[in-house]
Amino acid sequence: MGESSSEETSNFFASSFKQLLQRSLSPQWMIYIPTLDALLRQGSDAPKTTLGCLKLLPCVFSAKREGRVHRYVASNVPDLIEAALCTKCVMEDLMYKHALILALKGGVSFAGVSLSTPLLSRLLALPSSLLASCNGTISHDPTEDKAMLASIIGESATLLRLTVKNHFNSIHRCIPVAFNTIQSLMQALASIESNRTEGLASNIMVAAQSISRLFEELALLRQELGRYYPHILADYIEFAAMASLDPLQVVVEEEVRAISAGGARHACPSFGPVTLAELRSGVLALLDACPAAERQMLHIGLPGGAHGARRATLQRLRVDYETSYRYKGKV
Image 1 (cartoon, rainbow, N blue to C red):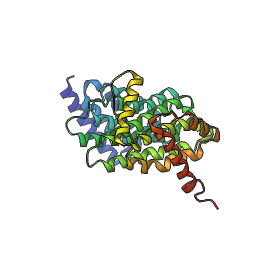
Image 2 (cartoon, rainbow, N blue to C red):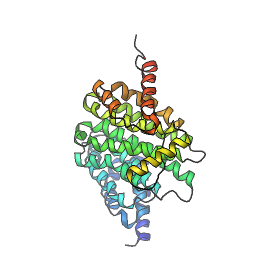
Image 3 (cartoon, rainbow, N blue to C red):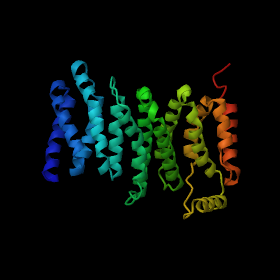
Image 4 (cartoon, rainbow, N blue to C red):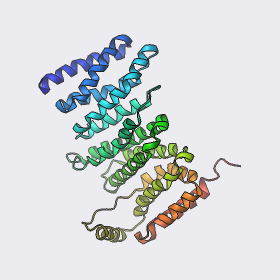
């Protein structure tokens, strides 16, 4: 079947499926789920069909169903997530990446579904690989593409938050994967803000708010995750510290990094005022939940250089915590 005929079939399928969902004809629309699964798995043959199917998944996951219909959909959620992850190979466009993240958000939020640890590990690692493949995709309209990229970052943070919230008992063995992804999200957001064009402040703000809510969710799991908090805080301090340097100091830091790495000089991404303001509550929540031993480890482990900006940033963070957060709401 050629791509054109495949897309005609999928358009008919998508239209029929949506009508059934909208009319709440519960028994009938269930028969389309295997077709949806199959179309997702053959995504490399018809990318536009794949995009249409990805956009349908949130409808399936969010539909209000009860009894046997709910149980049937729940039993298919892991397979649908697996099928959606199979489309990663054709995710060369930012719109596809965005649709994929939105689809997976619905899957991890579906009530009464248990997902396997290997599948959850792939979910947690997905945003990192999607962001890594964004290199070179920002071309025809930098502002529009960066806005979409910021949305992908924000939705990815929400995907991680929902995964941790709803499936924490199953992801304890792949927690390091989640924290690597968090680092990728912060780096991607810092890169956008370091080189942003006009009109992106609201997009960056929404993405930073999503990351902050992720931090707040992680802060609730102090006993299980406390030893990982210094790593998140150290990454945050790195990007915040670069924002405090003047242009000449930034150039010196870039040269130092290039010499250390033995390669060409690259720009040091940094958070701007919008991101710093929106991340504040989440970062302070992590600092509040960080055990004393880990706080000391954070202080000792911060690298030198950068004209002392990292340690100065940590000191400002501590002062902010002591003066405006630590005793908030306490008598």
